[in-house]
Image (cartoon, rainbow, N blue to C red):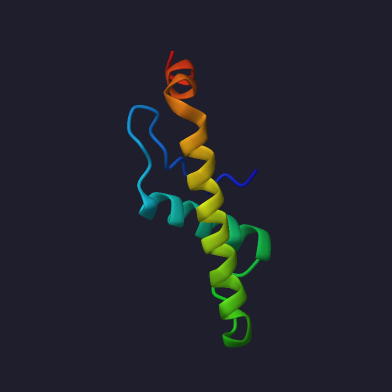
Length: 73
């Protein structure tokens, strides 16, 4: 895994939508190999970031409090 990917979620606090979007952007950049896509690919890139952020939001909402508590102990 890439060492430059930062932990954006704190177990005691819920992740914000901005943090989820930042994590999604990091992921899409890493997977695509582009820091900034060309104009021709911008729409696809932005859609991928949104879809990943939506998936992260769904994941975190379904993990529940018990998962966060187990990791922090």
